[in-house]
Image (cartoon, rainbow over all chains, first blue to last red; front, side, top):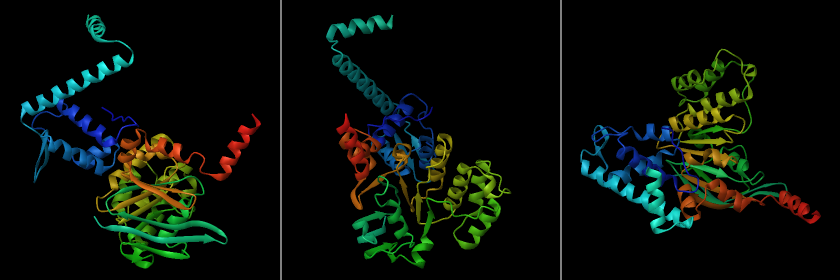
Length: 119
Length: 248
């Protein structure tokens, strides 16, 4: 999938979110090798230093790890990925509720609308 | 990471006109840096000083610890804002000349890019379109294994598809020990590949920041930030806009 960036947010944050999303949704599966910094930077059209920092951030949160001789891999620990997924879902819900509040839709009304949309 | 460019109290005048006024800044190796400023702000003057094409009246410029001269020139691969190649020569011949001139020129790298761009290297430059000529120049400049690449307006004359390719060429050839300094006024097209920007306005360096700090602190792109802060930076433009207002 092509990389697209919101021009008002730091690129670093968007790269981290995108890679997290790719891991959570299985674009990169547990244990998969991650492409090199250069390849990812080229694909995303971003600065290699930004990509490097983003990968370090993912490593810090435990979603990927570095094998010193063979590169970076997605963690085999499925519960870590599960946790990242839950946090992504949580964030999306919070943002949705915020957006609805901004449109002056509140509480039960939101629930009703969501129920209607699911049907 | 070490300091690659160091400008200390640099002043450059053309007669009575001050083009750069007591400029101070430093750039480390390992970055892609945007040199951004309105027309006439001093971008090209600064670039010419770094390349030894002009000499400052005051102050000192060090590149890789050396004053601008033979050693610094060997470290820099420079793309000027004008076409300086012999139009009657074929691409192939020009590449050979580059290889003779620059010991760090990588012919394989150049041909790999010419092939991917489908540039016919047997053709003389004058038979190529304006955009293709620009691509040839960029390929030649990026095919050197330099420590500092200075690109003066590299994307000014090309269409969006070619522009994307050029950005990929820059990223593809970027080695993490080198620094690329790119001057442009087309900020939006290029800001994702920059990690740092230097703003130059009215002969002064008015800021040096990281792209993500600008976005995080202002909630806007570097392009939007630039427009907001330098919209009326050009005195002639400002006078023109204000005249217009007066008449309405």
